[in-house]
Amino acid sequence: MSFTLATWNINSVRLREELVLQLMRDEQPDVLCLQECKSPVDKIPLEQFHALGYTYMVARGQKGYNGVAILSKMPIEEAGAEDYAQLGHARHIAGRLANGVTIHNFYVPAGGDVADREVNEKFGQKMDYLSQMREAFHADKPQKSILVGDLNIAPREDDVWDHKKLLKVVSHTPVEVEALADVQASGDWIDVTRANIPDGKLYSWWSYRAADWDTADKGRRLDHVWATADIAASGHSSRVVRHVRGWEKPSDHAPVFATFDL
Image (cartoon, rainbow, N blue to C red; front, side, top):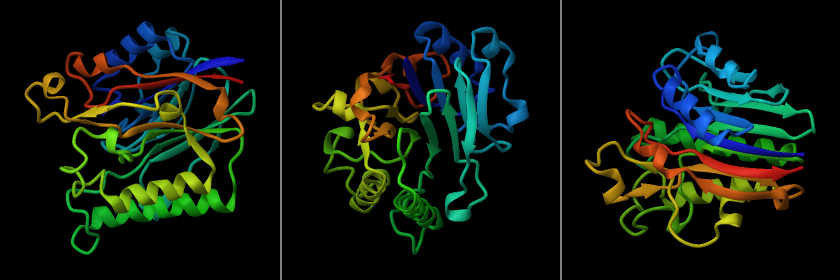
């Protein structure tokens, strides 16, 4: 069984329903994981998604903030949802495909602007969230699993436009990078994107603040596709669909794709 999966921080699924539909038509992923849906589950606009074959969904939502959903052409059943750091936020949903693969869809807190939990509560929440992810995967080692989402950390030097300039900027600070590495190690997760594209600058997010995001190209790779070591070698054809960032009224994230032969 081969399936293609995409992860995309959509920054409001209701506001950008047409962009989701365009991606479905153009790229036709079998599974589409969305973050920052900003919608209660019962308000997610499913009718046209269903018409394109995405008849299955597992999701967690809330009004105006956060929210995660897995839309699928293939049967998928809910496999859990965790409230790491006890924030009361809709930031995680897991679904299980008929072939036994579990897909975890995460939206890790961004962490605010200051990388110091003593003066920035949001940064403390982010670090606690990562810590509890690590503890959960260490206690219950995942197998036959894929983890995707907006993890809000660009871990490698070539995952950001300027490593030295961003060392003190939230999303690329050493303490965050170390925390994410600990999460990855705790579940024996393999970064499928970088396994497939090992070299060179690679971004999935570009700030709205840039007048010309494409020319400036001051991006960060905040969106990830991981797989457990037992199935990671089946992942291939990874890519960032960069041009989507240039669509009309876009999300500031571009979708990240991978195909799995399982």
